[in-house]
Length: 195
Image (cartoon, rainbow, N blue to C red; front, side, top):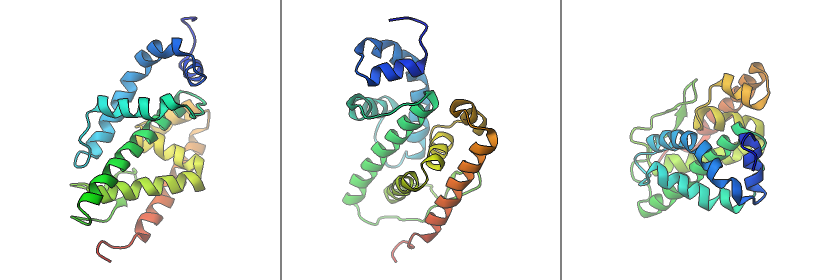
């Protein structure tokens, strides 16, 4: 195995079933995956009884190792990993919500930076709702969903996204704003708790 191959090439080899790259790949991606997992778990601290290592383990074994990820580049990998982490947390939230239907529901809203408002403490219903909306955004506007995943969920700046994706800063901002606007509109159309 050549030492000087890029992360993208290692990821693609791994996805093609090359187990020889796993150790080097893990060493390279774990620090960023830990950052993403830590950020996700901080957002979901009221519903996620997982450590960042357990969350990464769930994603690695439960999703990535099964294949099916079509990885274009490093940024795309981290966006997909973030999406997979969010789905793990959404599934956990759904299970917890089923146990205590309707307790403490609040509405969701987004501010201009894309941060969720009104989420302290953030309950399971909110996580399920944002998970469902992100899936709908991905189906309707995949490019916009990727920008939201990379910026909000993975923590990339818009400039870093431009560098990772090869898009211009203007294209990234336009797609980010489109995704943010769509999410805001959908969040505002959700029924009020108890309605």
